[in-house]
Amino acid sequence: MSSTALESFLDKWRSRWPEWSVAEPFVAEPQRARTLAWFALLQELDDMLNTSSDPLPADAKLAWWGEELRSWAGQRSRHPLGRLLEPVRAPWAQLADALPDLVEARAPASDPAAAERALLRYAEAVAAVEVVMFDDAPRNGAARAVLLQTLAQRLQEAGAASVPRSLLETDAAHADQRWGQYLLKAWPMRVAGPRPRRIWSVLARSRLAAQVAGKPVEATPMRTLLRVWWAARG
Image (cartoon, rainbow, N blue to C red; front, side, top):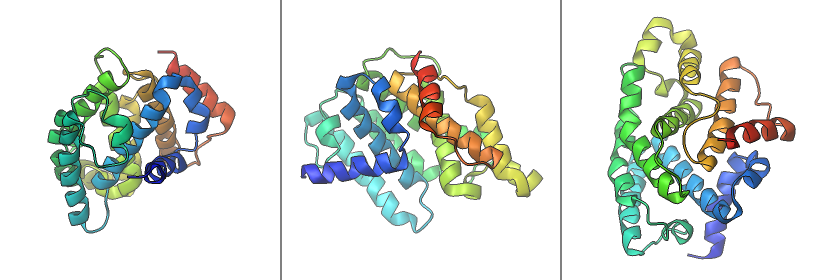
């Protein structure tokens, strides 16, 4: 595929995360293009998890991505993001094996613990890729950071459909807010994992905090700079 196709995927992610223009300088220059491509891929997977329409096209895309990720071990990528990601000798098959869990995770979980279990294998696979992607060491808590961010993104995209049934049954009017509060309590400002993940995590957490408070995100360049600096320190 052409460089234009690649840029279209990267630009889609940039448009969703305009704060990244402030955050990107905190990522080592040799990792910046790879980071952008990786996060763009994860956003594609999030979209398939959080689809609100007919799930069959999203299911077909997930199946296609499973085949695509497995092909990267043999350097046979077809997707434009593969141009930047395929050369990384990451555990792509592990991630491919976890993609069917995204289909199952669309169903409302019985309680918060069940919601976490549904996406745990996927989060562990993403964290395993990031160890290699960003030349990092395995860290306790890295998979949980991915898990909480994925659940937060799901809440923001899918709303009540993402909230565990136990919260809906006890207080349906405030269930979204209570689920967001639960995630925030479990989600520290500075998470475990490589620097690009820590930076993206703090940006995502600030969005969830604003949603829970019923306020717009205060993503001025100065506020973003302070958040990112704190997260990047490690």
